[in-house]
Image 1 (spheres, rainbow, N blue to C red):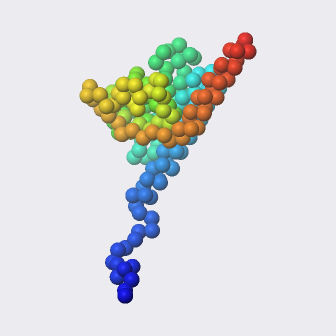
Image 2: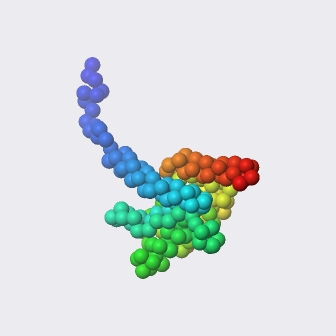
Image 3: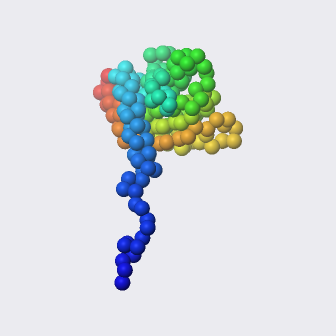
Length: 183
């Protein structure tokens, strides 16, 4: 009796190209999210909610712009990391359309930021932690699923989600402790 394996003409790829692409994308995304987390840490050190964002040109992997939350320091209720990064990228490129660029942010964007992402024509959104209370991508209005949304980025979530969430939890835990201490 002949073995099925000995007669098979199937060539097995030891590392399928689709798997390789997925691993490389995850490594790339993790690297950019680490940069966004460093910005989020800077926000926390400045007393701002720790959220960081970067905008990347996927053709070159160049970081076009970066920002962290600063509504308090900027006296600006729209001073979210995503908005500030979008503004900086648009100014750098001399165009309000950021077609095809990627936005990495440590927390699921709110409705205001999702709207700005759509208007800017961002090609891909990558975020870390989900925000069940204020998020507008996977939660709340699910902005990009609405028929009135003109431009929908590809969305990847969960990259360094636990690290992003822990930074936020630690920040707010410290603030609550400071208030209970009377400071």
